[in-house]
Amino acid sequence: MLLHLSIENYALIKQLDVDLNRGFTAITGETGAGKSILLGAMSLILGNRAETNILNDTSRKCIVEGHFDISSYQLKDFFERNELDYDEVLILRREISRNGKSRAFINDTPVKLPLMKEIGESLVDIHSQNRTLTLNKSDVQMAVIDNFAGHTDLLADYRKTYREYQNMQARLNELEERESQAKADQDYYQFLFDELEKADLKQGEQQEIENELELQNHAETIKSGLMEGYDSISASDMNIIQQLQNIHSKLEHSAAHHQQLSALLERLNSTIIELEDMAGDMNNLAEDITYNPSRAEELNERLNTLYELEHKHRVSSVEELIGKKQELEQKLAGISSLEDQIEKTRQEINATRQKLDEMAGKLSEYRKASIPKIEKEIQQTLTQLGMPDAGFQIKQEKLNAFSPEGLDKITFLFTANKGIPEQEIGKIASGGELSRLMLAVKSLIAKKTLLPTIIFDEIDSGVSGDIAGKVGDILKKMAAEMQVIAISHLPQIASKSNDHLFVYKDVGDNKTFSHIRRLSKEEQVQELAKMLSDERVTNAAIQTAKEMLEN
Image 1 (cartoon, one colour):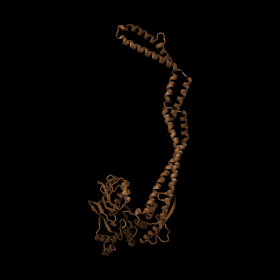
Image 2 (cartoon, one colour; image 1 turned 90 degrees about the horizontal axis):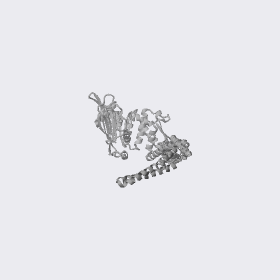
Image 3 (cartoon, one colour; image 1 turned 180 degrees about the vertical axis):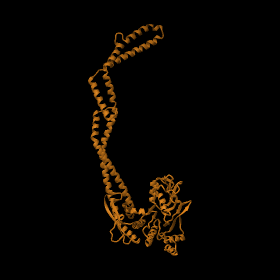
Image 4 (cartoon, helix red, strand yellow; image 1 turned 30 degrees about the vertical axis):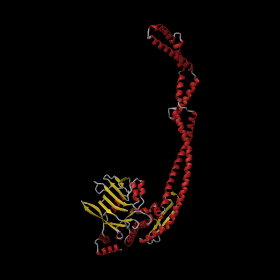
């Protein structure tokens, strides 16, 4: 429940602090005093977006803070799930800076607005004239039935399974699209793969072919050069080796007369041996080199094949072509794999559809069993609210496809007058009638739910006299189950409250400000008497106010 509300620099409010109690609290005040401004400020800490013109003093920021007792409500999971500190007294704070930027805090931890809205929806339900229109919505009507039926766990399991079902359907669609595209490409992929497979590619072969082809193209020149070298070194009449051997013989005779000649002779002898080896290698190479036109043609054809494939696949080496072949092989294998995945997903969808069908069937049964009880209770409350001729009916229809709520469509039908058939709410109900119908629905829900706080704004719209007193009785009855706060302009309702807050305006520093204070019993009598009177408070009005409070 809401323990304390603090508002600073919001619209007509400069500074406001108010403590709130359990039970039924009425908030009254003159028109324009700022009663609805309280709700606007309150909505900020419940996660609603801020308007740009809310600052009373544009030189300071706006701060709204609410303290809530959450010790009796199962909210620890929310805090653990969102890694927030848990305390039995929850503090929600909202700050709006001068430039319009907003900051939200849960127990002094900065959070994003949707998170504040999530916890706010578990704490407070604000019911206003505008919110009454939501009763026209099918999802709200369905929520009323489900709330009364009490199948919360089953509905949660169904919704979880339904989300899984939707994800499976989305995955199946994606797989089928991929398969369709893949099959359109399959023949082309197979052709490319077969072409590369037939090419029998080998690592490093391109460089080997290019080297061998270079040799073939210059075979005669290379062989001629090698033979000339061989002749010059060892085969001609005056070859280099013969000349060096002659020099060696001449120096050998003189070596005995000069010490350094021995070292020179050793070096000369090594050179002769190296030249003999070189000459042998040249001769062997020359013998191995033979120009083969058919081999050259074969090499050219193979190289052209490789070049064409590289150009086709936009690569520059055989190694990259081998990589392309592997990619194509994977794509072809993937097409086969897609077929298996699609079949498996279809089987999962069928199993989940059967599970959904069973769960939706149970939900329909529970709703069907609850509808007569709901119709009866709401009919009784409408009679109590001065609408004895009103008719209320709930139509349950079966859908052709699963929805997030099951296989049901729920429609509230209503008529305020005898002899006029029930029709959909939005087509027949006036504002006052719809407001009373919504109160009947809220009072029904109050018996079944554990919502901490409900705030009514103008719930008395379109009612007066004895009916207003009946509205007050219902609000007081609801307050036994939850904290009820009602902004009202009717004394019949305000007199039923356990607590009475008064909103008023005054002028200071040439500006108008809104304030709020708790009324004593004597002040409450005066306020009720003023609400009962036209311009001047009479003794009769004061006496009536006292009687209303006593009763």
